[in-house]
Amino acid sequence: MPQADKQPIPFASFRPLEQELDADLRAAFARVYANSWYISGQEDAAFEAAFAAFCGVRHCVGCGNGLDALVLILKAMGIGPGDEVLVPSNTFIATVLAVSYAGAAPVLVEPQPDTFNIDPARIEAAVTPRTKAVIAVHLYGQCADMDPILAVARRHGLKVIEDAAQAHGARYRGRRAGSLGDAAGFSFYPGKNLGALGDAGCVTTNDPALAARVRALGDYGSDAKYHHIYKGQNSRLDELQAAFLAAKLPHLDRMNAARRDIAARYLAGITNPAVKLPAVASDCEPVWHVFAVRCEQRDALEAHLAAAGIGTNKHYPTPIHLQGAYAEWGLGPGSYPLAEQISATELSLPMYYGMTGAQVQAVIDAVNAFAP
Ligand SMILES: *Cc1c(COP(=O)(O)O)cnc(C)c1O
Image (cartoon, rainbow, N blue to C red; front, side):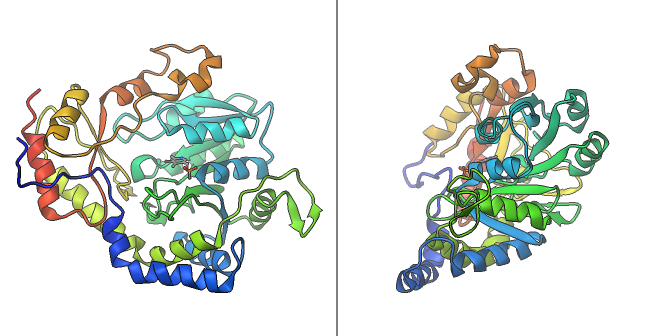
């Protein structure tokens, strides 16, 4: 029941971290403004080096956003018209749009229903002579099962791209997201685990030639000023965003640990049999970008929590093959049953750095009080 003395609990909030780092963020702004250099300068270079070290990779290339990061990787790999790229059926649409932007054909692959991540066995079944790559999305902050994915990919000569937009700092068998495949795309959209104060993204890789191509492709295809070797695009990292990101990065592990604590409390405290809790794979240390529960009466649960002043979200309410953007596929309901089932039953609970113990308990109590 909603109580008058309870503050509403938002789905997410940036305020606790921003208040903590207020002086650092203002100093970052002041430094860039004093320097009067706004794109691809020393702040960008410093953040790239710090984020590469954080992920345990040799190269990081800043870019405009997470979608561009994936597009730049695909183009840098020479993937385009006539090629097929395997993508999860239940991802955020940006993963799929990246393949379309590169001019290749996205091919949807259903997930493992317990982890929500792309199913390595189904990858093998989807490979054709045209398949060039697989994009493994670390959905909700838990890494995809990368070793079997890499094994299938090696057997068929496919590139493995990580969409790590939801997984900054997550680990798989001890290794960080961003270091697990041939290249990874990150988003620093404000709501991600590491968020800028606007749009930003990056590519990580251990391949120096690929990193150089990504950098050139994001800068009008130029490898030197006014010297253009590719028909590139404009997707670079702003100095201001790089400076803000560099101020936040030293706090990322701590912020992720706070999310892990919230998740642990949810996992221990939510006992309502109508609510299915998310599974953690044994090899994974997720960073809980999203705490995704499943409920057959999802919309009623959403309304019940809203009435208690608790914000929720759905990741994602309409699967990609049923979106107007891909009407050209002519696919109706039933085409990707697992993606459809997740869309119909998934609800994301509040999860953010700075959420108080009382707020976490209030969510647990409200979920347990739900009677379908
Ligand atoms: C956020 C997100 C993207 C896109 O990132 P933007 O910076 O918003 O372009 C791509 N893939 C996944 C899985 C995401 O969550």
